[in-house]
Length: 217
Picture (tube, rainbow, N blue to C red):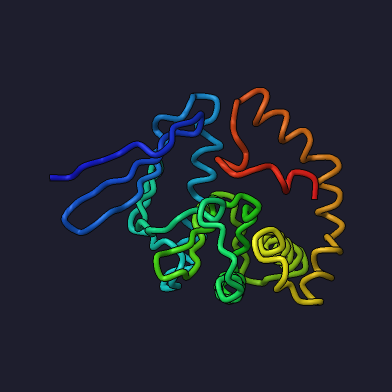
């Protein structure tokens, strides 16, 4: 007999965890989205499905099982969110960087690694990445894609700076000190509007349980 548990419910639908004979799985269901958010929710679902399909076979990324117009089913990765695990071992960040390079090599930029809950620390202390709703898939991996990949890297390094600062290399410090032009423009123009809409109007916690230490850098 299958058991299910609601993990998240918002304007864009519901996320459920199902337990069955074959193990746990995650289902993102947009049929419960508000009528005005349904189109956006389905677009995000398609982006996540495309990213997971491109990343199939990579350890540390959920496996896509089924996808329809309304729902996506993927494997469950057991791990603790970064802001709860607070890893201070430099080996974790080296492994996370290797995983991120594999993701980028497959033509996917995550675009949402500022959120610590999207980075998991598994029981063997290896990293995993989840929530690819904002991901960008690109076969060509052109200049804009490389800029997005660099921002993925910067967000990961910001987490390392917070939890494992003594092990930042000089190159990593230079990357942190030089955000890309699109990132600087975003922080000065789009980010304040995004925070107002999501937090004041929609009542979201952007970091879903983590602190706001990255809100301005």
